[in-house]
Image 1 (cartoon, protein in one colour):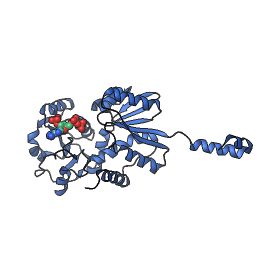
Image 2 (cartoon, protein in one colour):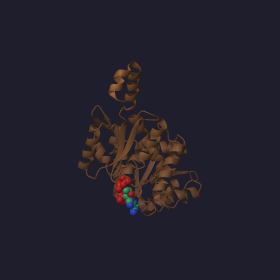
Image 3 (tube, helix red, strand yellow):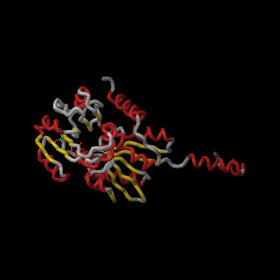
Image 4 (cartoon, protein in one colour):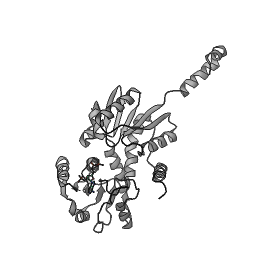
Length: 305
Ligand code: ATR
């Protein structure tokens, strides 16, 4: 609307201007930083929730090359541009923690942050991967895990968050195996778990109520995780943090045996919710409609099989 016509038109058009101003209120901005980042499903998840809630905002992928300096430069730029917050994915989760002015106890314990929230010019780091895995586990196996035991495969960055999540839901006895035994041992010392040899994993399956793959084995382009579920408990929950493909050979083997199983997609959707609520101030439900939208995006990405 042009100013001249407004001046002549009087009160009713002043009201019109206010409406226009409201309409042009700057959208809330948030995004995900990673390298590579084009594959990230976070924009699909956040933009699904934004559309459903009618939020005036955008969530965009931003690439930052692997060094800390590159990460910090991009984060500085987005903070100055008024971004409400950022999710952080590989290889920058440790950089995000180092960059932050403050960090939540969970992010400190995990040694990594997947969320940065900008408040009053400060960057606050948090880790919702931990709560995300816990929520996915509860969705699958109810709420009560006290006295249960878990076998974790892998001792990398993702394993730290999974170990904290298992402890947070009350899993008492956690055994960790890793190709490089020393890394399993170091993680076991830090989190009071027990470390066992990678080669013993098939035997260890028999005493676990929950089995979790935290390695990249089974991911598209990686070899499958060799794990024999033959001796698994009849109601053992099998979890994979991998979500591409949606059904890894491990999950396929679990379903073939009638075992409850879930993929990394559940964790991914749940870890996104706190950021969306905080930055866009609207509800973020993990439900079938979201799952279908994310699965459709994954299928489209995979292309013709
Ligand atoms: P992330 O942050 O995703 O956990 P990471 O820190 O690189 O990634 O950890 C990868 C995990 O997958 C490690 O536990 C790694 O085992 P090592 O510590 O021995 O490297 C495991 N991994 C990767 N390739 C593997 C393979 N071919 N066989 C067994 N374990 C493998």
